[in-house]
Length: 211
Image (cartoon, rainbow, N blue to C red):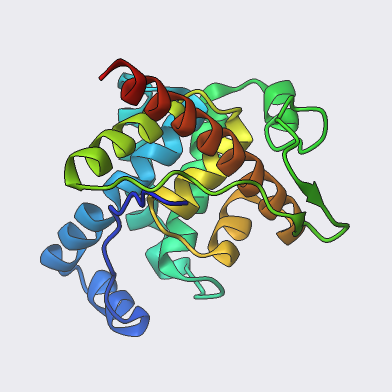
């Protein structure tokens, strides 16, 4: 998406990780918490906003992870499993079913329709690229703009782009955690990127014009 937002950290081999967690290895658990905290925080904030509610959901997520380790069957990655727990707890915390049902709507969300998408969620006419910053100062400014603009996205788009482009989760992980079809995940991601491209172009253009 042009100015990349890299925060994620790699987790150990799945089998080794589970063995250590189930054996009560505190260092391994602390490393997992540290490595996933940023991604979980951003994901939970999509549903409940910033502040005490997000803190409590994250805390409850890790409590649920510890309680559920022995029942985890490994049908998904550990990261996907934990992300799913966080999403479910965040939805419960918000406790507004009508909003949950409309959260990942891909039609009629008011997104700017730059380019044309085919029937399987790929662009036939790609949207314009994100402006490329020329130096480290511009790259930092672009990252700050993107993070602010992500907070203004519709919730479904925000959740997908946060996991895909900020936390660098795979498309499969995002679909599993958010309960999306592959096509809907692509539509939401592309619409989010379109909005961010447009916002970044406007903001950088204004700053260049005033300098």
